[in-house]
Length: 351
Ligand code: ATP
Ligand code: MG
Image 1 (spheres, protein in one colour):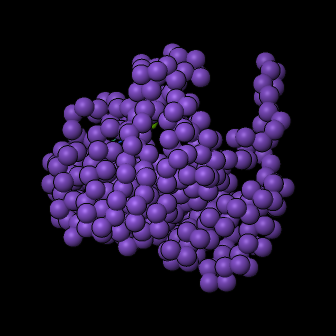
Image 2: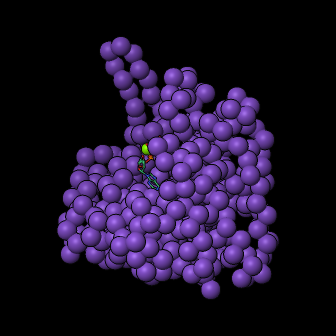
């Protein structure tokens, strides 16, 4: 197949890890007879430096004309004093809005090699392989009214039926590519918005008789993620709960640098590692590129429909880990690889 990929390396370690992910996509293209046309575009601090705008119109236009967007990271402390419209992170928020993405997928997978590095006991965390599907465009973060005075701060937790329906479908679809179990997380014992959430999720479930559905209150889910993480497949939840639960789940995995994400549902899907720009590591060839490479695997699966290629790329990353090799942030026996060496090791494992 032929696909156009907009590549937004961004700031800090972003360009270094994205370079390795692109190298892997090149190898996948060679092996499978695909053509991926990649176009590099500025975003974040890099775009502020280049043209004074963290998301230049030309970058958004090129993303919208592509089949998928692969992003590294944005941000640097030297922009901290900038007003909000001129912060690198504002570029990312505007990009998500401009693409119209509403479903954020964050897997938390504990590789057997890294189970010992988890803050949880190994016997609890072993076998953990969950996917959090977070609603990204509505709920407490965006619903109106919102206001702030010296005496009162107001946000609104509201969901419309169509918003719940579309995120529920994204979760059931994701479950079909996995172990076919969805746990919907809400606070329906207290919140009206959660009562609608639960009703609509049950209705959508009728279209997916092959997927099992259960419901948990968010407080119970927060506990279950640390007491029985391996019992979850797909967790479906709203914007606020998903923000908190996905960070909680990610810390179980023993490697921030390992974690990919996808933002789906809009005109074009966006793929990026969970980690940030890590300016402390930038330019030293020490950053872990696996989160970016696994994001490229999600791109192959969710944006291009290349499920076999995605699985092969994931398997190549896990082969490198299973051989005991990795970058220095990982608790593996030979944590000596540089960023470029780690990318090359994955490419060598791709057959
Ligand atoms: P940002 O503001 O962009 O989020 P940050 O300073 O908060 O940047 P993060 O990228 O969020 O940094 O990561 C926090 C720490 O985790 C980093 O300082 C770094 O030490 C480590 N880290 C993050 N990503 C990686 C990676 N890919 N490889 C190795 N270490 C990483
Ligand atoms: Mg950070």
